[in-house]
Image 1 (cartoon, chains in turn brown, green, yellow, cyan):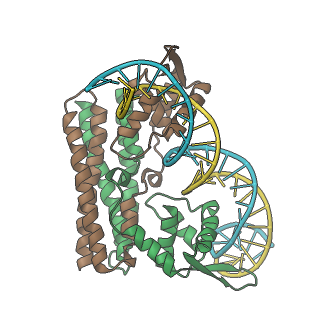
Image 2 (cartoon, protein in one colour; image 1 turned 90 degrees about the vertical axis):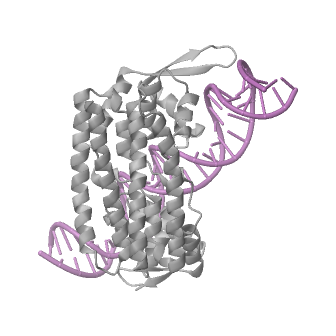
Length: 173
Length: 173
DNA sequence: CCGCTCATGTAACTGGTTACATGATTTA
DNA sequence: TAAATCATGTAACCAGTTACATGAGCGG
């Protein structure tokens, strides 16, 4: 997946450096990859060896960096991944840490269970507010798909909050 | 995470075999771990070595299996993981393959983009129907938390469907 | 000139998957 | 009696993280 994400990020920001790609991952609020150097740099060299991306050296002197662009093969690889059919419904459902927690809530005392729910609600609300301000900011910008990605995160957190209400109601019953 | 999930599954089904634990993962519809032998069996031995679980041999003759139970330490490890504070908001957001796809939809033609949306909608609806029938079945059962886990999956898929409507609307605009 | 950001890289590790291998028990 | 299921395990691999290491350029 990181491989595809890197191709995708290059498609959005080309020409860009490995460092630039890392920062995109690091700064993205919708959880995921750390943008660790140990993942990105070896991956970039592999992608270039496979002909999916091309690099050019930017200034051999001093602060030199590689500038990456997507090749035709790289683009068609990305297109191929994007196109239907999508993977199985199960593979579309990521592991939700909150869901896992609630699944095993039975080992806690009733009071502790409620404490977990309350804490989860607070954490979600706060993170939602953060992403919401980002989204508002780019609402009428040119990066529609970036905005929509943030909307996805917002809607999914809203759904989790609604779910937490259900959970609390059933626990109190 | 698999480590915690295994402790959790044992807490729910103890005493149970490694095979039984694997099946729980395999059959769970809310995507995640494959329940691969190469993950479970070494992990179980490690957990026992660490004193988090205990095993007893069930019939040395013929089809023999190990029967696992949670130890006090194992239970308190699970309790510790469950309790607040939850991880950072970012770490609570798993990587959503659908979101990643939409993020990079720009490389496709407008018609292809809509095809992806339509396919995603169909896949989600079908998977939602499957989980929904499971959830209905266990609605008034004793495993409230199992039911709520499925509800979480359902609500999150509903949110994704609503989001896809937003995406389509913005793409058509 | 000090600290921050840009920039690249490696080594050790963790956590998981796939595929293979084995064999007993149950069921159609 | 054949096929499915119960049951356990290993080896090779893949993807990603953490921590370490290095160094240039830029702003206060």
